[in-house]
Amino acid sequence: MSKKEIEHAGECPPRLLADVRLLITQARVGVASAVTSGIAAMYWAIGRRISLEILGSRRAGYGEAIVRTLSATLTPEYGEGVSEKNLRHMIRFFEVFRDEKIVSALRRQLSWTHFKILIYIKDPLKRAFYAEMCRIENWNTRTMERKIGGMLFERTALSRKPAKLAELELRKLKEEDTLSPDLVFRDPYFLDFLGLKGAYQEKDLESAILREMEAFILELGAGFTFVARQKRMQVGPDDFYLDLLFFHRKLRRLVAIELKLEKFKPEFKGQMELYLRWLNKHERQPHEEAPIGLILCAGKSEEQVELLELDKSGIRVAEYLTELPPRAALETRLRRAIAHARERLFVGEQMENKEEK
Image 1: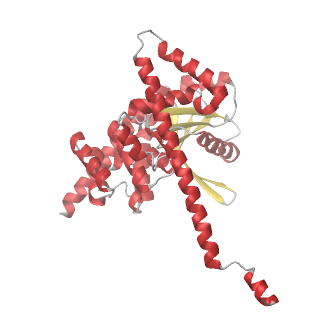
Image 2: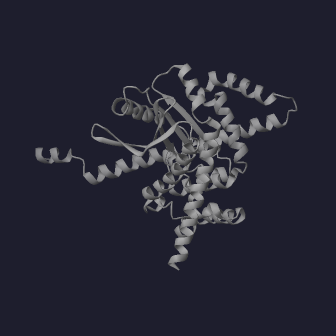
Image 3: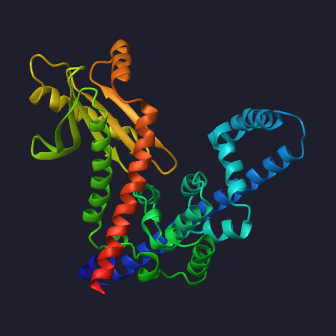
């Protein structure tokens, strides 16, 4: 073999290299998938065993005690995977997904993190919907959280069907693994799953809720003055928009309000603090106090109201809470605003459909 032939033989053929890489990648994915599936099955079995142990005892408080004891015994041996918190997740996993066949079908595509999100959705129909959508569309956990936070289920035609009919549709979804856009995603203000005007429609719902909250706050009187909706704030090359801005005469400060259609997340606090710093620098007048912020969160299981301020003084927080609407009242009104907004948007669409006919 000549020197040139030897040098050429040392080069790896591109097709061979690509094929071997593909085989390695496929094997790794297969192993990871098998491990993930096995973990979910193991956690379900552990949850079942603990649940049966608790049910078999009539002693008050036995369940709490046995979970603590079991975790304390096993954690040194097996690590945080069997922490007290995780054991409670496992028990909940079994309680929610009693049918092992359903778990076996789902665990091929869903990780334990997926299941931990699903098991705390109280509505069985909603939970089944997200489980099937996640399985069929292969959502990662971040996508699943975004879909739940964006109220995907509530904005589908399926959510408005009688329970038995909706269950039949979900059964069909499980058996055929296909989606029917006309049936499941007919709702006009949620079409982002199909790639159709989702951002615009999302804003429709947010705007409707914000109008409700704006009216509620102004109805209170109590010193609130409307300043702006979608207040533009420029930070470097980026533009940010605050949902609602009020001025409270008695507190002598701006009140920033931001709506989130999902449960509270730590990053919301950082975003609001950015807004408050901007308002403090560019909008605050010399005679005014530092602005404060309210984050209204329409979570999947409950409504939350978070109060933030630049000055961390506890005395001032107490003062704000006596002058601002009670937190419970805000949460109740937020819940009502969401319901009214959905109803108005749905009725409006029905009327548009009639006019088109």
